Image 1 (tube, protein in one colour):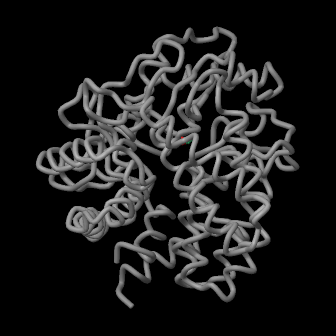
Image 2 (cartoon, helix red, strand yellow):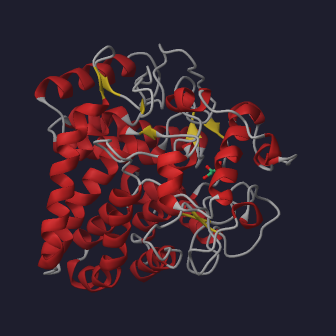
Image 3 (cartoon, protein in one colour):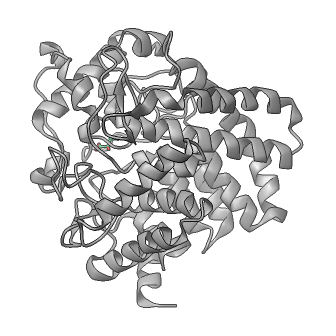
Length: 419
Ligand code: DGY
């Protein structure tokens, strides 16, 4: 076992809060949805029972209508804002946010099952209905009337909080003056120049206030809320997760669920062109109300390979972008195109490399036979961790670590993939 393996294990142990793992102390002191799914992959290399426990505890936060929220607040921690007293949700037995996160869970469950079918199938059987209900929630509650793809109502729901992708949707929003004075905590624990701007935070909180004022009625939030954009990240991740859920349904002999899941997959494949920005020749985020496209190649754009979708031409043009961008930075793949406006190599989702996104992109590339590019992304993550440590994300130009340190998903993906 190398020193970095030992360090990764100790990060996961230190971030354990009793059966679930926080992303990093102080900055993110609760259980986060997609973090936990990636963390389970790493935990499975050390203690498989603990990996399944992570996922079971995530499902504890599921709401009555099926949503698995982005954050489960099991206590009220003064280190984090906005906490449970701001969200004021009641739909789950735990205090939670009122929005979700990229649904990678089904895919991580299938990955665990493939590694250990004997035990994995029994565990997956216990989680299957919860995950099926969550996917139902996504298809029912996040598909606005007349829109061919699932959408998102909050940049935090996409996991790619301050990506320039969201500038369009945020620019058409007014800040609600009644969000009142508030104190950000994130900039006490991290360098403010690497975090979202104050205006972005005011708008994030404006959407939270809208949800709270409407008792977190999800149909109202989707159809009448202040922000509505289609996200290639959520679209491709959900399409892949639907395919993986279908495989789980077959493995578990849950044939009752098969026709419904197949319909979701067909609808998503048919809707994918909605996200194709022909000007940029890439899959891009899109403002649903104005129809306008975001104008940059993000690290969600190449997830078409992970979803197994896109025409031959679309895939070829996506590969061209990936190769072009790989030539511009020391490490790949940055969260935003260095040649696009608003690129900032250290500001959160405006440029830094994200370990979990490299993992998803490389998984898709490998499956499409682009093994050299995939191997490079893995090697890049390995080198970044060797150079800088287990950071939340990394500057693609210098390799320095950004924002949260001793970060759980970075440690987990080191153990499960990059090492
Ligand atoms: C944060 O607080 O920055 C989180 O990303 C929200 O989910």
